[in-house]
Image (cartoon, rainbow, N blue to C red; front, side):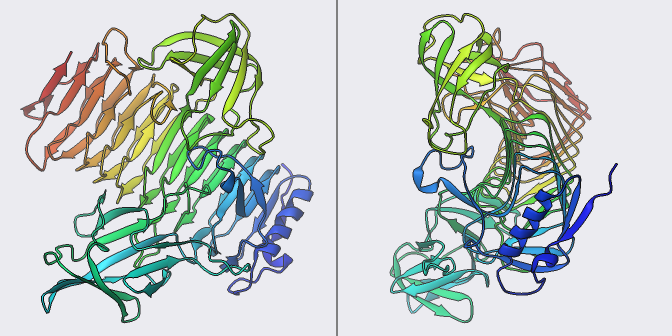
Length: 580
């Protein structure tokens, strides 16, 4: 094995602890690393590095579940770009990269055997406003609140309104701006350890607003009852996912290890069209003592159209605005069928378009969109599709040529999944907390093992298995899923929820197969430990269930066949509802 060449960003002018823009030096260091043959280690010595967008590389990219083909957001600004590089280690224990403006923290594109290790990423001005109610009451007959925002939040009071905004960039424009409750709110309760989506009362019936103290704002109201939300945190943001938080695109053998994500703007760490990606010992959490509670603008981690193995282990996920981990493929709607071997496919969801989905030799499955039952299989012989890197071709349509005849009249009622681009999944020893949604979403037909995780009071299910060709268009069915040795603490929905989105469930034609729920500990309110629909071969054994609220069903089965359910949990009989 050749000895790796060693470089440091300080060799190119980056100054740890300085406040000047380190982006030119970081870009030069990466270019130098790309020019060397053999393995390279690029080091960030300990200290802070500020990265501004003006000198950062930009690429036209189309990323799953973001802004689709909206031309306003074609170009992505990338603070740390690894492109067409093999055998690279980026090491940075003790180094903190502080991003300014709107950027993707890093992207690994068209690369192999890349490891990013030890870095901490944060934003100078996060794009989520965390407002804590620190005082509430009635004064002179008027209800009021005092809210406190973190040091990193920029704002101005303008009459009876607040303008939140990002930094002023070199162009003179602000990075982002919005007013009052912005476009979306979720509410975090530090005392109960729960985070939920809900209405925002902070800016209703406002009589006056004034800044008081250093980071505090008093809001008086012209009518209403005394506020009863002392201590709650209103997490407010805009809704456009204009950038991926980080991106692993069309790459293989990528490992993200020991990283600390203090804030991710946009859509989390997205692995797209990649093979063998591992995320290990990473921390997704705001800096302790910062007054911030939101570490992610949306999801934390998403695998879309990947293959090989997708691994997430020994991580902490704390404070996203959507799902911490989501693994899925993409169904494409069949919009036309010119002949028996040709399909005209369409991206159906507005947030996904412009990315390639197929290569010659890939295997596809065609399903009935209402039942998700397979109709036919074929091998891809040729494809005309967008590149994911430019807009010279149509961004919402794909023409697929198959190597054998297909059934006729497939247009409008069927969908296609690339079954070659589906990963095996291992999710182990992670902690999920302050989550408004599900903990783990997974839809892949290869082996899935979810083990030894702790799910603390997610707003919905702990583990969610969907598959739908009508809403999010996230494919596909599970065939071998094991959920074992996990702890589910008071989830807001079924702890394990197998929920294919079909018009009517039929036990003779199941969507999912081979789901084992074994050796888990469930602490539940009135929700079930397992709720499953249209699934064959469920095993539910050696689990323990503790009820913290009113008793409900322990297991709910809807149109499920060949289920093997252990009927006793300790000394108590299992409460099972079977709905045919």
